[in-house]
Image (cartoon, rainbow, N blue to C red; front, side):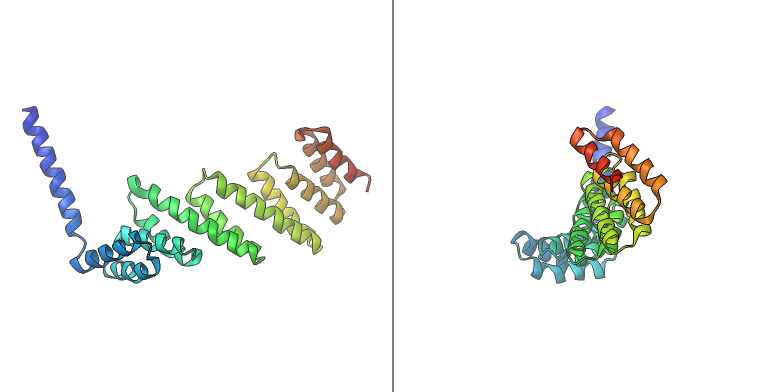
Length: 225
C-alpha cells in the first residue's frame, strides 16, 4: 500500500513538473536556452536580446527576467538590471523568491552607489530604501543607507540647509542608534539653526553611548563654541 502511494506521488510530481515546462512556449524556451548558452560563456551582451525575447514572448517567464537582470549585473549596468529583476521578484513564488531578492539587492545597491558618486543623494537614498523594503534584514543595504544619509546631511549642513540636514541625521540615528557621526551631525545642525535645547539633548544622548573619553570630548568641544 505504501509503495503504491509513493509511486502515485512520484507520477503526480513528474506530471506537474512536465506541465510547468509545457506552459512555456517553444520559441521562448529556445530563445532562453540560446541566451543561457551565451551567458555561461560570459557573452552577456549577446545574451541580453535573447533573454529579452524570451520575456517578451512569455511575460511570466521568471527565469528569463532573472537571467536578463544577471546579464546586466555582470555588465555592471545597474539601472538596466533593476526593471527585469523587479519583475522576477514579483513573479517568483515564495520558495524561489530568495534568488530574485539577492540579485535585485545587488542591482539596487549598485545603482545607489553609482548615483552617490554623481552627487545624486536623493535618488541614491531612494534605491537604498527600496533595497531595505525588499530585504529588511540586509545589513549591507542599511549600512549604505546610513552612510548616504550622513553624506547628504553633511552636504546640506555645508549649504546652510539646517532643517533638511536635521531630517537626514535623525533618520540615520533611527536606523543606527549608536552611530556617533549621526549624533555629531545632528548636534551641529541644531546649533547652527539656533536650537540649543535640542542640541543639548542630542549631545547628552551621544555622551551616554560614547564608548571612549576621546569620543565624549568630541561632543564636549561643541559646547565650547
